Length: 237
Image 1 (tube, rainbow, N blue to C red):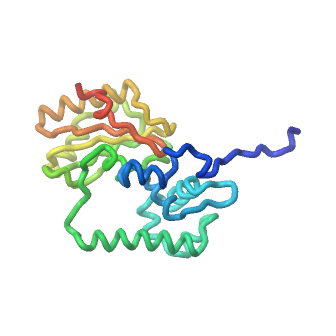
Image 2 (spheres, rainbow, N blue to C red):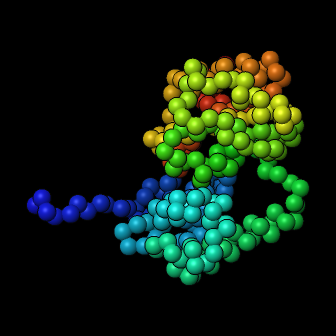
Image 3 (spheres, rainbow, N blue to C red):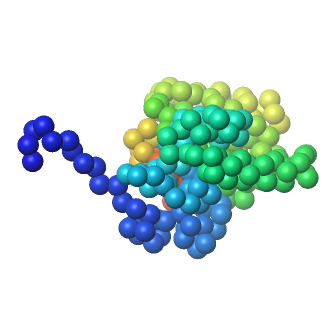
């Protein structure tokens, strides 16, 4: 290949991906709560565009629309301004979002309920997985594990010398939360917990016991993946 020839990136089609990584198959076998927002959007879109499979198209669309919240507020014209999204795909997206709105309208007082690490991760993944800096957020829960609020507490590197445990619990006390889940992202896309993540978790669990506010989990969000420190037994000994 000469120096002037462009490098051609290999982009696998969905059918070329391992079966357990394909959005539709993951939805069928792992259940809807185990798949990310981008994967749900890919299932809705069905097909990608030349040189880009449907999952990458869905990821790019979420980035350009600033997450699900931005997509939900976008018009047909705004959605079709994204390369690869024509009127048909835009209508499919808006129809799916409208179904969600109508479902919420039937129970306007019901807030999301967290029953698993996947529930927590899916609430935040579409917003956090592409952030260029680490963000630490807290999901505040009532006694039934319904979400009260999800404030952002820190932006920047997560370590015990910077994170003030009191700042994290201040929001929980203000909202009279019974429990909380901590979540932060790894900009690298790899959600593998670091030793510092484990140390922060240990400090949070200790403080929670003193304040009678249970720390249910610490979720690390990567690109299309997450890790639950509680599931791995890290920091919750």
